[in-house]
Amino acid sequence: MDFENVYIVTTVPEDHLEAVLDAISGAGGGIVGHYSHCAFTNAGVGRFKPSAEADPHSGEIGQINAEDEWRIETFCRHAIARDVVAAIRTAHPYEEPVVYVMPLLDI
Image 1: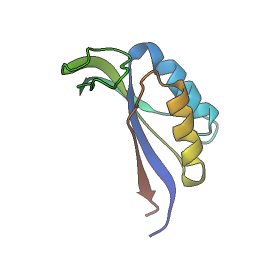
Image 2: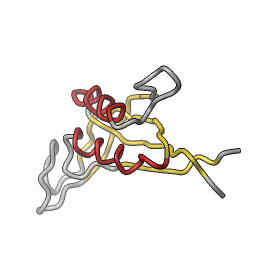
Image 3: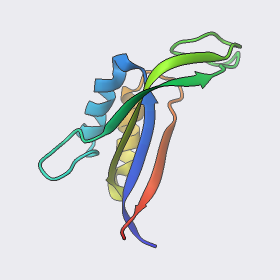
C-alpha cells in the first residue's frame, strides 16, 4: 500500500508547546491548504523513570515521575517526515522525546 502522508504524535511540557508547534510548521508539517500550525492538542500526564545515566528535563533520577504534558497530534507529507521529526527534537526540551510516526493510508 502506498501512503503520501504520515500522522505524528508527541508530548511536550506546556512551556514548550508553542515552540514545538512552530518547529513543526517551520519544517512543513501541519499544513492544510492556506492554514499552518494545524494540530490537535490535549492535556495529559506523562510518566517516566530516569536511570542513573539520564539527564532529565524534570523529575528525579531513579523515581517514577508524573509530569503535566500536552499531546500534539499532527501530520505531514511522508517525503518531509524526517525533517519534521528533526525539528521536533531540536525544539523539544526533553533529552529523549518520544515521537510516533504512522502512515496515513490514501483510501
